Image (cartoon, rainbow, N blue to C red; front, side, top):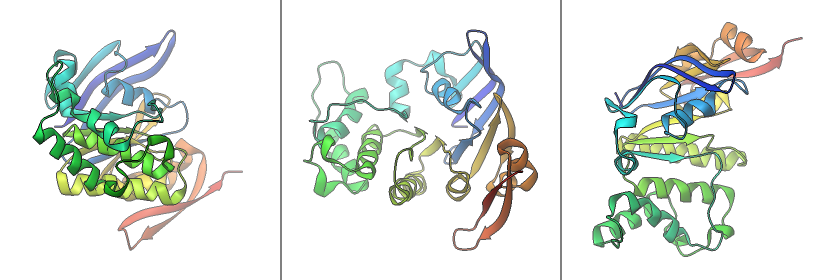
Length: 259
């Protein structure tokens, strides 16, 4: 098992945000978390990332209690791309990607040949070879997101956590990023956990999907289980017309507002 939670409970003050969350991700899967606004998706991602601490319950990374693992060791196992990222606009792609090697270096140690080779590989793998000298502030949305994924890839993680990786991107860049994520999953065996708002994209790019509603897991399963009329009506308050995407081998739907 790549990651698992048992009876996870998280509150902000008096507000109970996550309630008895049992969440499992097997090695090599792409698992997506979906749900209405305020359902607890980002809170769950933050808990898995150790950004916030649960009031009760357990979180395991590859079978170990996540709070028992030193931070530097966590960074070797798990790479995290939050929704909001902060970095100076005047650093180059190559410099940002190199940050991904820091968990593997001792204090004050400089990158060696192996580290530089991994940075080169991450840049090439994400299609940034011709852009490596450009500044972050000069990049398009899609290029920027690929750059952050390259930095995560340079960590050489087994688990990649993405909080809404397609937010603010045009549709072409959304597909570019998700195709890259799937290619890395399939070719390198990286386990992916992500939050998406677009349910059709979740169905297309996920092995399993968790549906959150009001802080609880409402449903879990394959895209065929999740893209289901009664569930979508109840959770998202839409009337879906469901079809089969024969090209990508997954269901999709056209939503209509319930009157």
